[in-house]
Length: 447
Image (cartoon, rainbow, N blue to C red; front, side, top):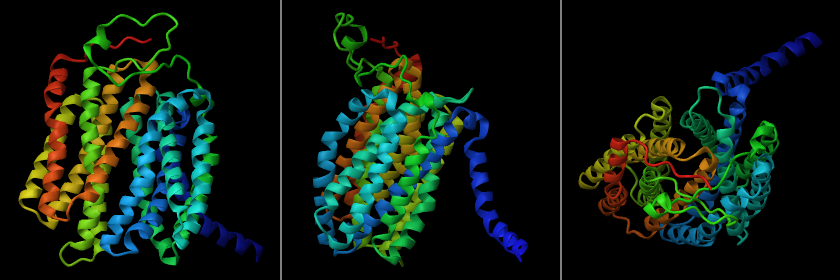
């Protein structure tokens, strides 16, 4: 009898252990297990799964539970109360974490545990609709940003032999995207049980992430040889005199190619925020043909996610080949798609634009990573990554605010989307092409 029970137990246990071993083989392949990158990929997957659980719960509370006009007011209030303070706090997070370079594992664990506790606080707020919802949501955003900044600093410390920073970042990002894709339907299923349940799921996931953070190698806590970098590229900074001895070093220059690439990435992230909110309200009021609002949003969301995943995979394959040309090409494709979608507005073109925007955003970001790796000295590279992430997050907030304020007219909305892309692309294309022709710009000196 005991043997039969053990056999049944092994049979039930095998699918889970087999899946876990399969995931571990993938994440730890090509030296990623030995370097510790595999554990970071798994941690980022946990991070993505927990974030999407909270997103499902908040979307159902703030967006789907009330009429469209009231939902726009609620989302605007949500942005005003959470995102506005966040845009002020975000630039401070990176410098604060720079002061604690030897506690990166603890910082990541702290970001995970903070979101676990805030998920429990939100589980009560989503039921009662109390004002606790907004400061708790702000706390989740801040903790998520802190995790992202530290993760950017950690990746260069975990590169396996022969790995480029772009390839490593694409693996980490793809792991997060796959986990998000798996967790989203699970969160939707938990939402059916009640608004608290996705948040309970987030609590469990982030609690696991807290312990997983400490499984990273001790070397991620090392900041030996690192400095700070300024996201500026004017001639005075590039060629000017060294600062006086004893003067506190600021963020020095990162090169013109990097700043141009950052500007066009900011336009891409602004487009992402705009499409997220504008299409959410547009498709709720005017669903795709033959579909309800939830299914319409799901179709567009899947298209955007698939495009993002494809862009990440293509970025890993291309590695750092001509990053300026990659950015110019993919953003030109987005601009053409946005213009075409505005002129021939239809459900098909909305989905195509969402997919193309996701593809271009992923590939443009990986190309920006490649330029930072190429043009920014190692001593200031992690700082440049942290500050670029802050700017991109703020651009997303600006785009989201425009998307909420705009009238629900599809042609007008996609025309605005095209204008956002054009503003970033037209102002940078000349500089990026010049950088591609002449190679890397003068290397910024380290202070």
